[in-house]
Amino acid sequence: MGNAGTRRHGGRAGAALAVCGVLLAGCSGSGGGSGGPGTASPSASGSASARVDDGSTAAATPRFTADPAKLPRTRSAALELLRAVTAGPDSYGPGYLRRSPFESDPADWPVLGTDCVWQQQPLPGDVLASLTRYSRLPAGGGKGEVHTAATVTVHRTTAQADQEIAETLEEALRCPDQQLRATERIAGLNSVGSGYGTNGNTSADDVLEEIGAYYNSALDKGPLFYLWDQVRLGPVTIAVAVQGGKGFRQEDLLIVQARAVADMETRVRNQLGAKK
Image 1 (cartoon, rainbow, N blue to C red):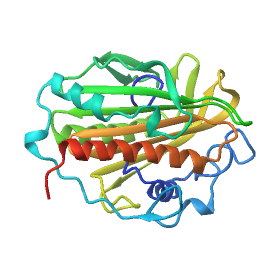
Image 2 (tube, one colour; image 1 turned 60 degrees about the vertical axis):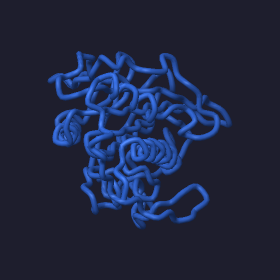
Image 3 (cartoon, one colour; image 1 turned 90 degrees about the vertical axis):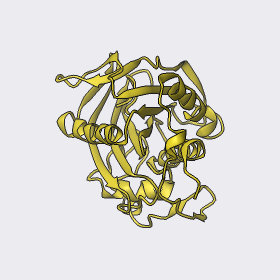
């Protein structure tokens, strides 16, 4: 998980829907509606090609190769990269605003305890820096508020970033129900990891998708959608959590999520990618 209240790829809506179709709990329904979080949908599976808002098919992005000379080696360089690539409101679409606070403390790191409760601790030695930015879509048009959180983490090595993905997958198995904050929790987490070339992942080293039910009395009494999408590009991990959205279809929230992940993935490629 990312910073408390979030959880810590590639960002294509079609691929995200294809991966979601692999999950035991499929992708369908409206948040808090009769479908509800975790209701299977035949339309969730299918083409793993990239789909964008106008329905066209985008070309697959080549697998990422970092330029060693461009990789951050110091905390200050890593923070500079994070501030350049971490998504804000503009990455999700029209109407999104900053939440308060907007940014996490980059000196903190979330740890899931044995009691399945998240808490903040100092960054471990293998992490150069990590940053989360929080955004929201205010309620309107008969639909509830949506919360989003974008997290980017820079590890010292690719192996350590790979370990973060593995640990996140293990956390969902160990704690399918997790306490995010005092008034926020997720339940019934279902997750699937996809290495390069599997489940529609045609660009990233690793992808991790999770879905579950989100409970936050400030947004709604009943369960809402919880979506987690994480991608690894070399030593960098990118993740977007989407929470809430009463009245939204899960597919619509997946598209918003994929748009933000794709935006950050493009920025990381431009900042760190090797010339072909």
